[in-house]
Length: 270
Ligand code: SAM
Image (tube, rainbow, N blue to C red):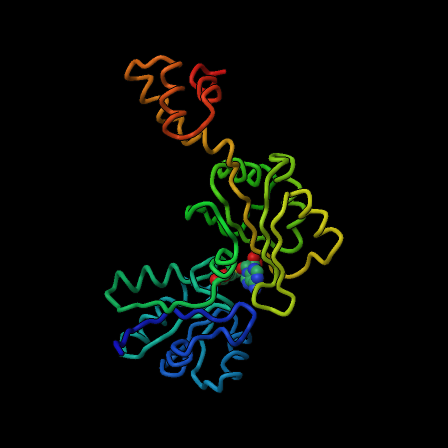
């Protein structure tokens, strides 16, 4: 097996059985593991009887730790990076060290493994492959409204804290009353739960049941509007070529299967 200087290693997001054989191999064989919270990682290492030493690497000391990591690697030793749960660099620290190590020519690889986004999306039926992952949602109402509206026409996947999930969904409901939401709670754990329903029903459910635990969510795109949004560019192209609103409506309705009158109205700006 090819050897690297620095390994990015996913760890389970709830179920210890989700560690991979290769992750165990790497964590055993490297000289040092950079981890977010050494108490969390130590539990994992103890469980699998791994004796490798850890050094903390979290968002508050990412920059300071760099020189230490670089000198460890320069001395010919190998390192791994883990976060508390899931895949490093996905809403977790690691970007700074990866950028610096790559610039300095160290060899880096990442192992596939547990990640809340992919675990969630791989059990949610969607119309197509496109989605936007926005990480943790912003905290202020204005920022939240902006991001929801900006992603109205594509499936928007997000992480949210249990303290804010209901409030966030209420803001979604105010902006898009008919929005459909998917929620993944406590994935891979004993009380894993998936909900796919209109935003109002999801709010009611969460209000009447425990809304604790860890959440991944998705707001499905506004399909009816997405049809029109997608063809707005095409309308402009045809207008620039001198086609009449009536002809544009006929052509695009034929090509995209969208109601002719709807296209006509968008074309004439009604
Ligand atoms: N790096 C991680 C990953 O690969 O998914 C994400 C780390 S981020 C700091 C933690 C957030 O991920 C949680 O607040 C929650 O939104 C989401 N998350 C992590 N584990 C989860 C789980 N088991 N079920 C649902 N969401 C989870």
